[in-house]
Image (tube, rainbow, N blue to C red; front, side, top):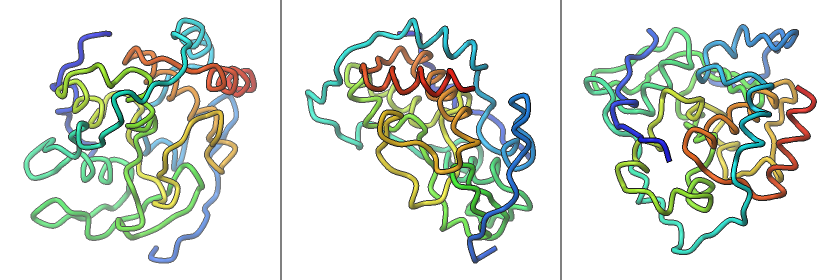
Amino acid sequence: MKSISLSFVLLSVLGLSLAAPVAEADADAGLETGVFSRALPTPISAATARTYLSQLTVEAESNSPAYDRDLFVHWITISGSCNTRETVLKRDGTNVVTDTSCAATSGNWVSPYDNVATTLASDLDIDHLVPLKEAWVSGARTWTNAQRQAFANDLTRPQLIAVTDSLNQAKDPAEWMPPLASYRCTYVRAWVQVKQYYNLSVDSAEKTALTNYLAAC
């Protein structure tokens, strides 16, 4: 796999208590405007994703040894008193106010998975787009702890995103897609980019699902 440095995660950040849907962004020509421009780094194009997908190793997942979330140290300090979660909340929100410990006390966020808005940071989870367990069963079980920490806190690839907390779950494109249909192309492009960068495998059902979704992008 490519060399993974912890320095990748040491990046500078970009500087409605009732959840409610908001207007969708313009999906024409693949533009990611409005709420989407405040989310994760823009993924590779659909054409590049299709090329990368064709190059990924296809093999059955393996959970031996058994997945242990504690082996992926996450929410490390990024800058000052701000950890990874707090950095993503500031990046993905607008008018975000933080206290002296960098915890978000107010702001406006829109979850790109379901287009639901909130003013409460507690309504949000920071989703690993490629989940930690998915990474484990597709190759991360052989990594060093330092490599797993870099993956779990990666702010450079389109891997971390603030979403409605009920949508943060173990998932696979063969079994789950964001409820907001207009975001699915972004989601699968990001999924393939992360898998390719970290040299993670895909299983056959996963590859079929990704192929089908990318064909519609």
